[in-house]
Image (cartoon, rainbow over all chains, first blue to last red; front, top):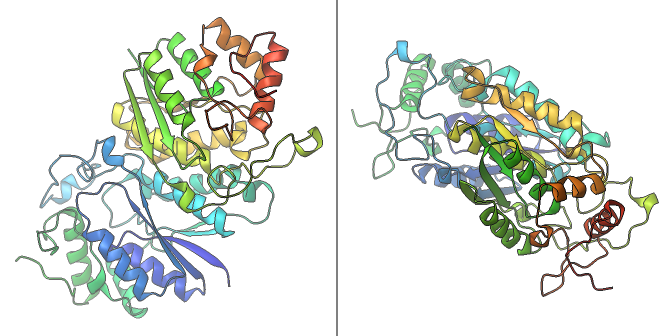
Length: 227
Length: 227
């Protein structure tokens, strides 16, 4: 069975990615990077999800990007709430500098040790927050770099592929796809700034995209929101 | 003053890079990644070197690539000694999967938070060990990826440049360049497998390249070797 590395944050998108990789017949190796996010509910969600998918191995790697700062997700900057559409075209303060490049490079390192050439990342270029490292041209460029960077790439044992099965989907379509694959979205955690008990805030970009997505998909979001 | 991020391992090449960046007038931010190398003498060397260059800030980031294994530098695999020339064309077991991609992505994350567009890495495509991620085509590809990956790249605030001032030099030329810039090579640590007191083994690829380099450069290596 071919092996795949799946970047698993514990959120809706990466969990749907995991379900898709499973459905495509891969042996699953999930990787969660604890990069100094504001909260650890995500990490716990990722563990629960990996367990429920019976992955071959779930790796958790600590990389303290909070040491560098520069983002509302890793630094002492307030997470914006209830942003309006006109603001949605700007890259928000929740952008973590070079995050997906760090995540993909670590996934590449893991994949190469596993003799795997398939990496899944749940980036999305439609209903997203304007992050530059979610665009198709970025992913294509990283894939080229990966094939030049590695022993496996150079020795032509195979060719690395960065799978982005969600990149062209709306949030509603992602939820529909996941629902068709029996994803249990009650296990996922999307919120940037959850309440003390781990329940979502309901008002950050991630919550708004998720809530709107479930409504448009005609699917009930199993999470509870404060209002 | 323009800021530069310099990947500083504590070895001969990265230290020469630091001296070159200083000579080019940059405000220096050194970054050492503790990725689970076999020994920590390198890390101590990096600290001493950063101090001696009076850098603006020296960051040390822990990323446990040893968790993934797959290399003699991070795993329980023996470091090869006294390899002969005919073996030097093969990628050796000291290759760390995707290492330079991980290092450069972390340097990119740091650079973006510092509003810096200049990253120095001491890769070398001549007297090297055949690592794929030391080749010019790899570096060029990463640079393209970096400019697609980041807010700074997208907003055209500047263009990231991966500086590789050593890439076309022989080890002897690197040593001559560093010597001209008054690099104190007694502070550096090149060996993959040092003795218990931190002295180099003298026989791993890194030691052989270094020793031969100093001889060809006509410069005395300040380190002591066992024979």
